[in-house]
Length: 284
Ligand SMILES: [Zn+2]
Image 1 (cartoon, rainbow, N blue to C red):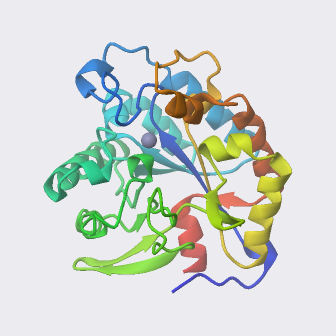
Image 2 (cartoon, protein in one colour):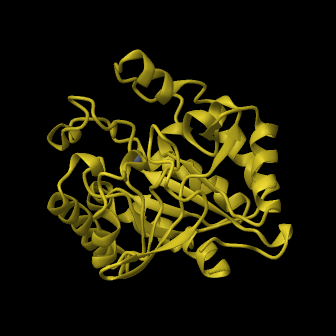
């Protein structure tokens, strides 16, 4: 079932932050080993402060998909985010890609993040986003495990051949699992020639011209669907240490990083946003 909204003005988009530090990069030796993380400079607090300031100045609330590891290390930061009225959801505990875990490892990782986060906030955790949007057709158990852990919505599917699956939904919808229904809010994509492309976060947001991004989201809203925008604290940090990555990943991670804050601010000025749980509640 797709969301069909009544009018362009009523469409509220999902605003999301994947709360992780500059060294949380999947699949890179040295940086994907949690035992090494304690030796890296902590930049999460000052970078998150910049994002909170920005959201506060537009009086906009978002969903923060918090890494369990960060919650354990910086509980006061999580409390501050919650006290400002934002939704606290989970990004897993150790920032591991779903398709690199077994079903049991996934349950342990997400379960640990949920219990860590809820013990800090005193509230249930309803939302999940996989590191690197890594739910695949090869992980058909993922939504079932999430629902088993009390998660009511996931935002990890990419409806593209290379990153996810063309069979994944393009707009929010519900799935049935053995433990009940779960919502999926997939990555927003746009058709460009013969392929669909992401454009509302990460490298694509930094590469595409601002008015292209804005007009495409407005077009999606005009058709009655919400879009989802995602950012990371390290995209607000021009002085972060650069990790020695293979060329393609270095490009993906750091290219035009200075463009993120300005473009996000423009979107906050021109569009309506809310936390993901509210977008789903408004239109379910
Ligand atoms: Zn991440």
